View (cartoon, rainbow, N blue to C red):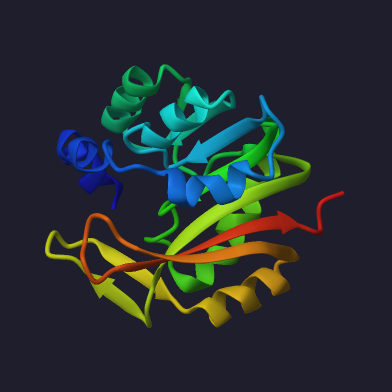
Length: 194
């Protein structure tokens, strides 16, 4: 899936960079102190990094596509780590919050608990996580061949409980890119951290 984003990094940047992220970032930032550190995993265009930086937070990005990572750095002025979250050791990082806006949409159901556990190693005790997923059942394939894992709210809530996350806030929003797509957003706090 990463090949798609690298091959189409300029087009993806242009299609996403001007979307106002306020509606889905404010539920997270309302729970953070001024100057909090935030890691945006799968930062894409750097849109959310710039929004967060403009509001006094200290964000950094994480992006697998080198092309997107470069564009995100230039657009946001923030540092961006290049890496694949599947194999990256997040335990060497330390952030007050994590942002995963659409970052886990290509992760298969059975792999999601491990992926969440891995990225949360970058979180300070008491930190918070923002995650969004596409709503639906099973999987869907877009015209460009990308496969998306779809979720219902109750299924995710059960998974979060099993993985020792507490849901602090839930919201549902219509996609601004693809009419008919609905996003499920959660602000979480891991309860199993020391």
